[in-house]
Length: 256
Image (cartoon, helix red, strand yellow):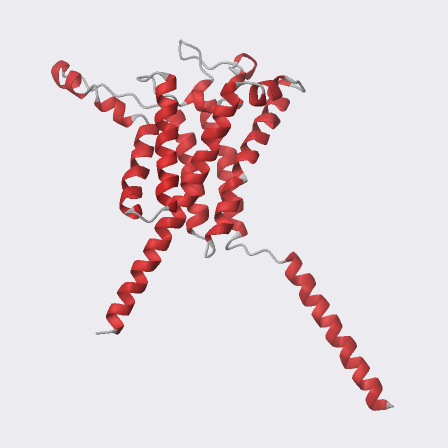
């Protein structure tokens, strides 16, 4: 009888320990992974619209304007803020879509992908930051003796988004986690636009019209999706190539 009772007690203690371990697993936060994701989201939350606001809330005379007088469309048509002043908006958008699409394609296929990505990614960043188009004026700068330089810092928003998605995926042992976290940045940014609009201008139906009832809003969503996918998928591809080369190098060293 005592043996049976003792056995029941041990079984009950085991159940309590097991349930405690399950509860601990449920509330456990892996700061090595979730912490990086949270940090990435905070960087996007502060940086994406923060950079746009700090560069767009000026009038033609360079004076700071109140948020009441700001162009409200930039919260939902963010891509219009970093369009190159040296290109037609349509051409700029088409080139941007083409480069991000190529990055996605070469992140999926295996045809000299790593080499091409190492060309396309810097090309995308240079294109967005408007450095390449400034070089067009280099001959004029030499002739006049005056250095002509223009830098659209609004472009840092899309570069920031690309680099955060790249980092979120690169640091993950399982790339799919980073890709998933990156994709969720698209609805996160859209929700932030609605949130900021409501705080500054109150509740209105205008945000819905600007975001989902206009072509510019859908172009903005498309650019966000392409940027997020190009950043995360290229990161996954380059990390796989890096691991593959490392394994080949280690195998060749062992076989000597």
